[in-house]
Image 1 (tube, rainbow, N blue to C red):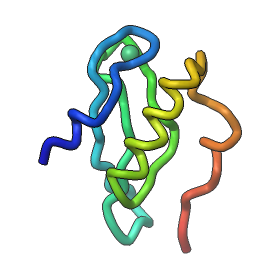
Image 2: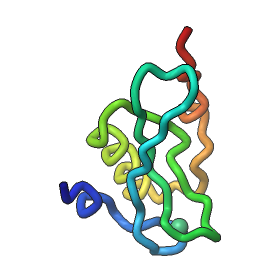
Image 3: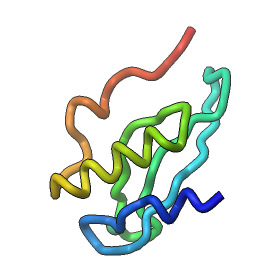
Image 4: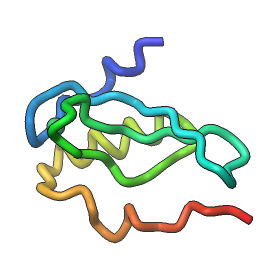
Length: 82
Ligand SMILES: [Zn+2]
């Protein structure tokens, strides 16, 4: 897998972004999100998807739009499942 190569650099600090594989209690499967690799930069898409392709798309779109904050309403969508 060379998925990381598809990710654009972080729009805030220029560091590489990475796909994070997140398993949370309550999820039936692993979910993916994208975060900046710089520990001092907390950039993330605030959103988890079931496929890497989706989170890559979201991240890159935000980089393109030069969004200065990653906490828009879209990212607050509930992901909990019961
Ligand atoms: Zn960053």
